[in-house]
Each structure stands twice: as C-alpha cells, then as structure tokens.
Amino acid sequence: MSQKQARDQGSGRGLTVYAQLFLGMATFGSATPVSKIVTGALPVFVGSGLRVALGALALAPFALRHRHQIRDVSRRDWLLIALISLFGMFGFSALMLYGMAMVSGVAGAIVMSTAPAVTAAVSILLLGDRATWLKLTAIALAVGGVLLLHLGRTDGSGGEGGPGEDETLLLGSLLVFAAVCCEVAYTLLGKQVSERVDPVLVAFLAAALAVPAFLPFALWQWPQVDLSAVGWGAWAAVAWYGVGTLALGSWLWYAGIAKAEGTVAAAFMGVMPASALVLSYLLLGESFRWIHLAGFLTVFVGVLLMSWEHARMARAR
Image (cartoon, rainbow, N blue to C red; front, side, top):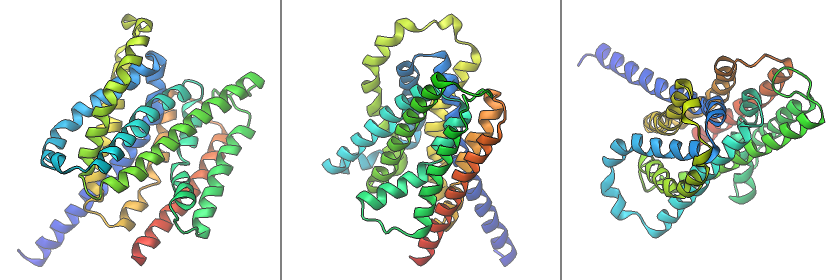
C-alpha cells in the first residue's frame, strides 16, 4: 500500500470516528425533547418501561458478540451493573419523564447541560478527584446558567410565569436535575465496570434488568393509556427514545471512543447540550427567548471548559 493510500485510509477512519462521536452525542441530546413528546402521550412508567425494553432488544445483537464475558463477571461487577440499572435506567427514565412533563424542552436542555459539571463535582467530593480552576469555573457556570433560567421567570412557552408557573418550573427542573444525578451515577459506575466488561454489554444488561423493575408500575398505569389517542408521531418518539437515545447512542459513542484519543472524545461533549437545545426548538416548536440563550450559553461555556480540562488531563497522561 502506498503512503497516499495509507494516508487516505487513515483519514477515512478518522472521519468515521468523528462521525460516530458527533452522532452519539447528538443522539443522547435528543433524549430531552423526545422525552417531552413521550410523556405527553403515555404515562411515565409505561413510556419508561417501553424505553428500556426497546433499548435492550436493540442492544441484544451487539451484546451477543460479548456474551462469553458474562460468565466472568464478578459479584462486584454484577452489583455495579445492578446499580447502573437502578440509577441510569430506572431512576433516569422515570425522573426525566416526570420532570419534562412540567418544564419546556429548552428548560430541560439547560438543566441537562449541567451533567459534565455535576460529574466533576461528584468526582471531587466523593472520589478524591483533584479540583482545578477550570473544573470549579465550569461548575460555577453550570449553576449560574440554571439560575438565569429561573430568574427570567419564564414558563417555557414564551410568557412570563406567575407564582404557580414558577413553582412548576422549579419542581420540574429539580426532577430533571435528579435525572442528571442518576446519569452521573450511570457514568461513574459505568466507568468502573467498563474497565473489565464491554460497555455495550453493560448497557444491555442494565437495560434488561430494568425491564422487570418497571413492569409492575407500568401495569399499574396501563389503565390510563388510551391507545386510540396515541398518534404515529408519539409512537415514533417512543421508539426513538428506546432504540435511538439508549441503544444507538450507546453503540455510536462507545464505538467512537474505543478508537479515539481522550482529547478528541472530550471535544465532542458540547454536542449533546447543543443538540438538546436545537431539537427542542425544532421538534417541540417552542418560542425563542433571550433568557434561554443566556442560560444555555452560560452552561455551554462551562461544558467547553470541562472538555478542555479533560483534553489537558488526557495529554498529561
């Protein structure tokens, strides 16, 4: 093979990796507006149960390739996978849907954008991670962005919210933030177990374990379901919520980071909140407000700082 052919082949692989990282983060970001569509059509536990069931089914073919690892999974790793299922699948899905029922897609996107900062804060407080000025600044910006959203007294529909709307926005934002905390637990626990077990297999096992956990709650809420009132768009959102945001997003992201340097992967962290914001306007038809943009940009600068810090630490290693 000539040097030009090798260079072209390497360039093609690099573009594929970048596309996987970009699309993986964009897919994860779509979960915020899509979850609002799902919660508008189905009860929370029914929608959440369908999400993890569809996600597990979609991940199964990829997980089967690593099925030989299952017999070698230690008791400690099974415990970690169970916790990932509890927080990352059950807790995240339920809290996200309940929260998004109360706030706009844009408000949810801003709160979800705090995930990298919350991850850093938990790592510093509980895992002994070193606090740097970039991490602390990113955390402060995440808090500031969410405060801007609430100080703007917007109800998410473009009007000024009264006391009742403010309370709903606050409660919904707290529930979405609780979902962020569950996502952080998923990330930190998954990082530990993925050192020994394939990440896609971990995602499949966690989703499969969550299905029986959702089942009794889904059956309890099933009488509230009016199938005739659920349109094709809502069913498409349910399908994407499971197959797309859970299965496809996990596969794309893990396939990308397996072949990318840490500095490259970190640079794509900002795609997720940007995707959530843009898709909230496109899919939900929400009206633009400058306070939304101010809050998002404040948090987004923090995401970029956190990405820069991850890249610096990866280079140092």
